[in-house]
Image 1 (cartoon, rainbow, N blue to C red):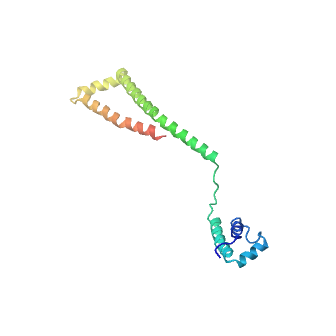
Image 2: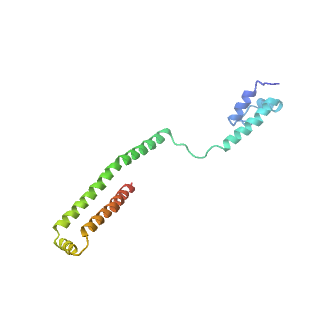
Image 3: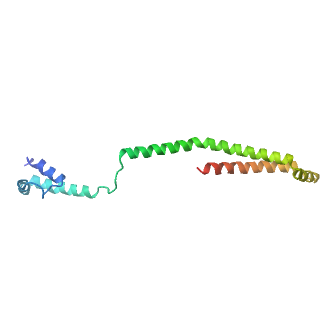
Length: 153
């Protein structure tokens, strides 16, 4: 025998977890005597039990929640990307303001100018030392300020 007319009924009962308790007695009696149906019960039952054991235990979120989380993430990333140039401009403006404040302090402070005059009387090229010191300070401080400002994001 290659085919049985009750094969589909037996397979449906096994896959719906109705076999053998909630199945008609005549179908059970037929499956016990038919080699095709008994093979279906054995194979489909084993596959169905294995499939139930491998199902994940976690809950899958609904599509609306997944969409909402994706939208919120996209908005956060867009805001972060838009804020980077603004942060860089703020750091540059702060550096320029500090440089201007230092220049104003140096031009208006009497004791500072006295120290500069005394240093000028020593036979060292203080202007060159001051220039290199100022450039070195800017080369170190501005990138450090940029890293600190951008790194906080």
